[in-house]
Length: 318
Image (tube, rainbow, N blue to C red; front, side, top):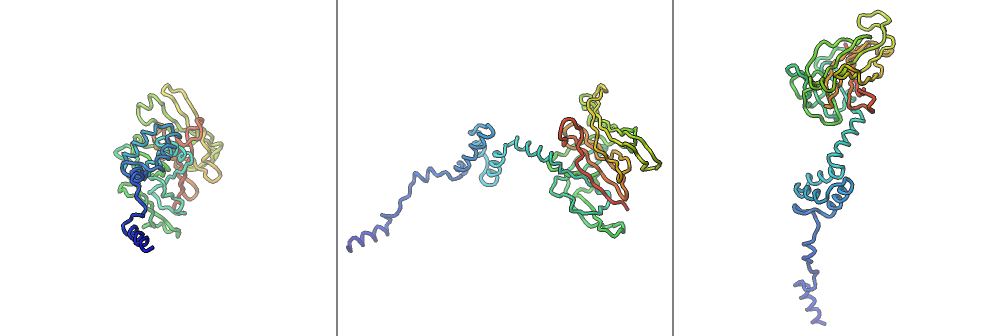
């Protein structure tokens, strides 16, 4: 009995009966390493390969060429979502949701400043030596240093750039900095019977795509230097080809009603979204203030429409 006890103690002391290490299992460990993917990662890659019809070997190779940690995890999620096609799908969905905004630095803002969505990607449209340029900006909102004395809270909307913008544009999708066309002055109020040639982005565009014209129909029924009474007022956007033939018309939703009685004018036009078609911001006087109305071409729900009305920005005047 004592001999058995001594043998047992000896075995425990020197590990004779301790659990042995399986070196084969260690070498076969499927935990993630710099030169190896984990079983879970391989299963997820296999699913992505089958879902999007990609060669699995290429996916594994790309993962192994990516450093461990956040970068490799992010790449795996991106591949599961469809890679480049997933990016396009998410971009299209964001455009369809029409979470756009338009704002301006030029006026004090009196209203609910919470309506300004700072989660969007914000851009300023600047006049750079006679060319409209789209540049990313960071917005900041401050109490106005020079309030009008109305008694309401007034805010200044500023950016991280020294130059003042023509207007500010918030987009749910990221855009590239770009030149948007030449600065053209002299847009007039769109009274019935008048039109505004929105032009083309370049002479090449005019040759191959034609140009776009916004014109107003209806009649003037009353007197008024700025806001005469209008009857059956309507804005129509037309696409005219290089041979001067009209290719398409789009009758826009009404901007003149019992409250907004003034005819608008084109405040700005250019290709904001990079689809080769002009977008526009209309300026309209309202009782006690003004409003900006943003129209985009690539947010249309169907091919029968040329523009979608996606955002407004109203400001009270002094």
